Amino acid sequence: RELKKGFPEDFLWGGATAANQIEGAFDEDGKGLSTSDMAAYKDPYAGESVNNFTFNVNSIELEEYLNNPDKYLFPKRWGIDFFHHYKEDIALFAEMGFKTFRLSISWPRIFPTGLEEEPNEAGLAFYDNVFDECRKYGIEPLVTMSHYEMPITLTQKYNGWVSRELISLFEKYARTLFNRYKNKVKYWITFNEMNMNLNSLYTGAGVLEDKVDNVEEAAYQASHYQFIASALAVKAGHEIIPDAKIGCMINRIESYAKTCKPEDQLQALKADQINTFYPDVQVRGEYPNYMKRFFAENNINIEVEERDFEILKEGTVDFVAFSYYMSHVTEDRPDAKEIAGKLDSPIKNPYLELTQWDWPIDPIALRISLNKLYDRYNIPLFLVENGLGAKDVVSEDGKIHDPYRIDYIKKHIIEMKEAIKDGVELMGYTTWGCIDLISCGTSQMSKRYGFIYVDQDDKGNGSLKRIPKDSFYWYKEVIASNGENL
Ligand code: BG6
Image 1 (spheres, protein in one colour):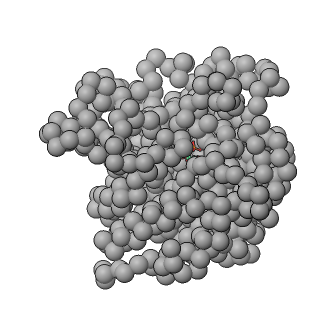
Image 2 (cartoon, helix red, strand yellow; image 1 turned 120 degrees about the horizontal axis):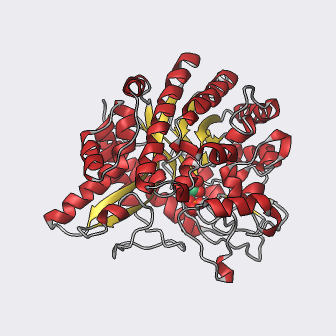
Image 3 (cartoon, protein in one colour; image 1 turned 135 degrees about the vertical axis):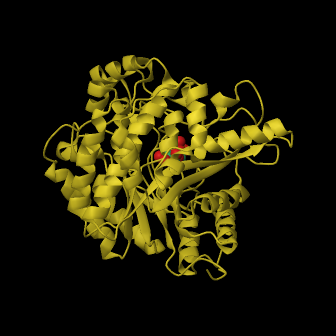
């Protein structure tokens, strides 16, 4: 291939969201309750503990939330009311020049409990309208089928993805989407950040961790069933939409060794394998050998069927999508295995600055990751999440001045461009939370990622007015110049 000097002409610039963090309207038009509708807000300013990185729900909490919903705030039930504002929001994305818009479909909007034979027509019609609106502006939808939510009934009845039953229920859902949107959507991702099952089994797989004997084993079991469901979906998608491009996705964390001590280096390799295990399976269609040893040595026994291995081979992906927020430092220590795969790390990198939520900022690791992933898979990559969660303020002039966000994204784009010059095939870049939305990990509104400010506070008060931030105009120019004017 020829030497690249910058972003390709057909580079897909855009932004990314997830249904449960934007839509709201949690019980409108027949939508069923989802796992994310149970993410109760815990007020950090009132001294309540907030897990910065993920939300988890145990079986006692779930009962409580279902029986006494009025006692709690559930921000993901109201989102930013994209359900009623989608036209206005997509028009703003178009004004920025988006080529693509990543969004997810809410499974319980299509199959309210997951168990119905027939889909909910009103739910399907909503996404028809959204895709038509995108197409009106020439914006290509990039659709995640499962982004951290599923019908809560599947948690209650099966404890989520630890049950094999979910495979056929997901396949039915996937086929419904491909058939319905075959003329409107070409780019698909099956599961969001599947490796985050190791971080929170409830968030990624609807599993109540207190209901399983061995959480680590359950995480790999749930992942196995998701691998099979994803492969079946990829296969069906290719049959139904011949030119579809269907990807897998991980949360990429670049792992540095703390020192050049060989034991630290070996640990960094192991941490990296835990991260690449997911695309290894989904790109190659088979389990990597290092995981066979890992399972054997850690007494992890997962149930598989012989035909699973054929399915994996038949449903390999077209591209590797990933989110990138941070790098980690690893060292040889007794809890090294427990730390690997988790978002939160106890080992700090003295060379990096932190965000207001203590996430290390490391644009160069993005270039390293892009190179490593491309060298490993040799298929196109798609950076589908990256961005800065920050507390924005509306200034006296009524504007939102966010130079820190511009600086963050600019530095990451510079490294993406370097990686492209290194020879990496990168399809596109969708910044996370292109419009302010509810945080996945903390359910806060005040952790803002957007180019577009949404007037709403953590408790759901506000006019919902949309205001372009300074970064909005900056990103517009980035897209117009195809990444040249930063
Ligand atoms: C990714 C998720 O892991 O990180 C998103 O796919 C999430 O859903 C994003 O919002 C940022 O995390 P947070 O906790 O700041 O919202």
